[in-house]
Length: 154
Image 1: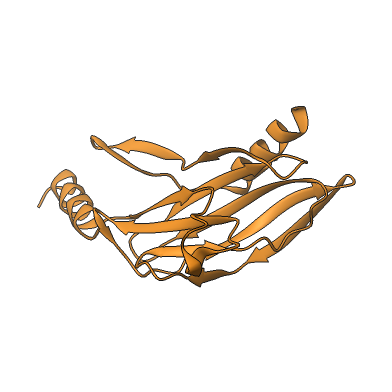
Image 2: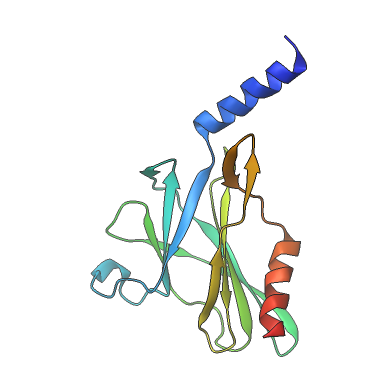
């Protein structure tokens, strides 16, 4: 079998299994008791279906000129595929929340940029076009550093 055909078959198999997707909801619905007090909610998907996949992440920030990292933990809510994140990082400084879901068939990562006053400046899920499909892009430390630099410039 030609190499190009083998690559096409492997890519098709990856899409069938497919990478996950992630989206961020904020503000969290204050009328939902299981999300009460959450900073934001994370929705996890595989194609169109919600999943029970637990996200993982970290808050990366600069406080008084010093870089800091805080691991994030998530709680299940009463809604399948929706997880609550409560604030666990200091109020001082500028922070980027790096929230990922998936591993086996790829991952999707949301970058949530927080200003010094704690407000959300933006949410991005980096993507790239591959073989005609828009897929989540692997997020590097350089991407996180760039998001922190953007915050510092403001």
